[in-house]
Image (tube, rainbow, N blue to C red; front, top):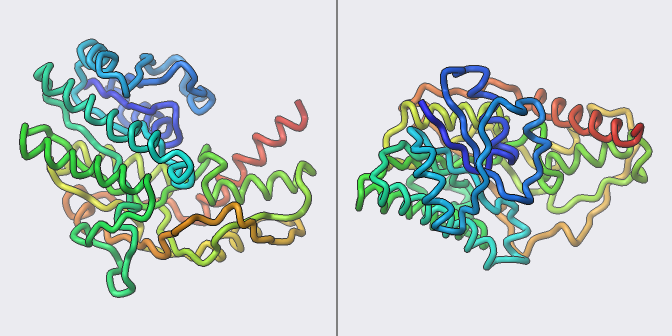
Length: 324
């Protein structure tokens, strides 16, 4: 079986590659990267996957890629995935996320390929969620509250449309928040962990700067999330949308408290207005019962372990930087 992972150099992509190498060694893995992609997320698996340079926003580049690889499964993870950046660069977010997927679908269709295609959609699509609508089911209205969320709604609906129009075996996974080691430091859990590790290493004054601490989120460990991606392609139903979530809500303030409890550092917490968004999704709690019923997936990693592993990741990285 040949698998193509777009965005393999990213957070989820690198964890997915590691999972497949460890649990499904018979799978031949190929991944896309751009000339400016940072490769450190692949340090642990260097040389064990085939890397192919491709600009997914350029149709000719995507056509060459798929004509060469002819994959049995495509995990489409490449995206501009940071919500705040979509406010400052909405056009780039929409162009990158929507055009890349159109190019993949069109190349698959024109080349006559028949892969299963997992589309990494997002719980951000639900946006404005009313109090009586949680936990959120796949049937909940989509009320996106950011340009990023709008781009993901477009990807989601495009996957449905190409399934209905052309029979493309597209499966939409609406992943709720996922975190863990190697998460970019612009994302909340990783950002807090990095600040704590920086304070421990004497690289930052003992003040943690925060944004909205009242938002409620449903976090899945990235290692459970990428296992769900695999389950989706093996046991999911083409054309369907699936929530992937634990169903266990946590307020961001409590998440910070749990991280601080893992450290002996004495810190103050200060609000940073720059970290507040023009509009924010206040509550995201997912109902993944449909996905669990169809695939048998269950999350395995406790959130406390996720937090500890994330903090240890930053401790190790910052310690090596300060000693180097």
